[in-house]
Amino acid sequence: MPLPEGLKSFAGAWPVHSVQAPGMVPLVFRATPGHPSTTLLFCMRAGVRYESPQHWGASHFLEHILMRGTDHYPTLFDVTRRIESLGGRISAYSTRDLTAFWVKLPPGQEQVALEVLTQVLFHPTLAPEFIQAERAIIRQERLRERHNPSAFVSQAIESLLLQPSPLSRHPIGEDDELARMTPEFIRSFLDQYYHRSNLVVAAAGALSEDLPTLVQEATGALPDGPPASDADFALESPLQGKSVVLHPSAQREQVFLGLGWSFPVSNRRELVTWRVVNTLLGVGYTSLLNQCLRENESLTYVCSTALNTYAETGLFKMHMALAERDLERVLERVQGILDDLAGDRVPADLFEEAAVRHAAGIVLRWEDSLEVARLLGQTFSREGEPFRLDRYLEEVEAVTREDAAGLVQRFLTPSRRRALLHSGSPRLEKLFPDAGVYPAG
Image 1 (cartoon, helix red, strand yellow):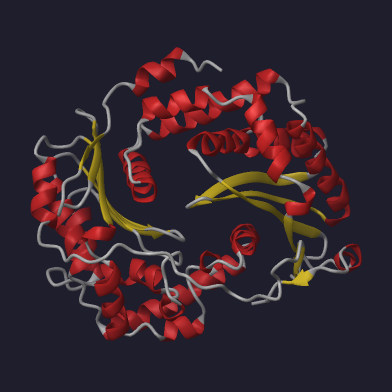
Image 2: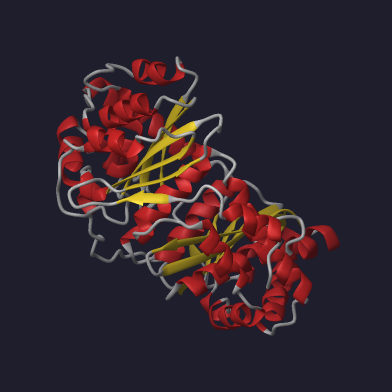
């Protein structure tokens, strides 16, 4: 299906470059002269995907504690002031398989960004008083998620889909894991994972021509070590194999519903097809779910989908909030939409528009240097090669309705579906007598 020429013509401008050489940290970057900002991002392969049972939660804890103080910047105030005094921002985020630290600054400040990031990741003080304070903050983060039904359902259904893989563990861990976070424990984890073999540097925006030299100078003395390997053990859970799981809450009239499917992703064509399917079903006001459930029948206000991939495993999730009385009708409507997609009965124009919307969403990320750096760093860390926008748009153009129908027919089936219902309605136990009960919290 052809994409608008405007999208494709833009894709060839300002290409992505990568610098890879033995003994050097990989660098992937996209320079846009005249852009109002510059972003440097250090992307580390670290998360529950790689953590042993003893190290559970360490990657997420490091995301918090590393900016608390370094050899050159004794406190969080000092770290952030070095960046914010120049008009910039510094922060971090973590996923199940990555931890990333980034600095966004006005142009011409790459050297400052590199100096601060290397300090944060490789020269933290790990003061005991900072660790104790961060434990309390992380407990609040966990409580906030548990009291936000949308966030809780999204995380919980993903964990259920990933069982029994170590990836299914919540990145934060529990109180026992937080109690392990001592300076000595964290230092040993840093020594094991935070080295050049697990690091990718990504950059975007108004970059200096000598950026590769600056990165090499900043990272040349970093420690080396073996690449992170997947944690190799299985988790036991009484919920494994349960197609429906209930999580009791104080809300009796409303249900926060999460539906999810897991499936293998064997090649890039399938991956890109799944992304178009995700857009068609749940992204934007013209998505099929939004049109059916919200606009046409007013069954739900919240209605969205998400697609995540970890190695060769794909996860497709739906999330919606609805009146408890409408639950059966919503499940029926969702299955009807999937049946139409599997039977190749979705109108061709809607499918083609979904491909355009997905492609445009990627292109629009290109406007923000932080979003570009995130995309470049995450893609290279996970796939081992640079993201090429022009090639990606060609892959989107190659997606067909037949491809999508075949994947939905094989994998988004009732027998493969898992459902999580967050509600206090007493009727749910009667509707699903064999349901498991999610550990309350």
